Amino acid sequence: MALQLNTMLPDTLEHVCPLPPVPGAVPALRRQVGRVLAEWDIRPAIADDCLLVVSELLTNAIMHALPPAELRLSWNRGCGLDTLHIEVSDAGPARPPGQRQAGTDPDEHGRGEEIVHALAARHGIRVRQGRITRWAELVAV
Image (cartoon, rainbow, N blue to C red; front, side, top):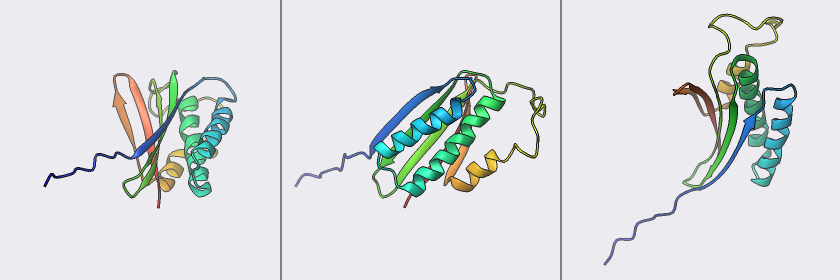
């Protein structure tokens, strides 16, 4: 009797797009991501959380990092858990640590990381070859 191995891998959908360093880029990409999530038939609760995480990570890249920046979205279906992986990569900090962008009100900024951490099942930062990637995963149960 031959042993049969399950070689099925989870279905993975992916969407990648650049983040232009221009005013209006974050809302435009947020709308684009909303359309992608609808095409992927993501449940509304997960889609809403995803759009918030995307907004925070993209805003962080626009406000605090050097271009170029890129958004990558992956939807892994199968193996019991459906996982939405969100990552934004950029060229690193635009200013030295601790130096704020002129004209920003600290009471109106700085909560993005807390929002991402509260919504994500997992999150982190990866640094490689002059690129910084901030990522978060949302799990549909």
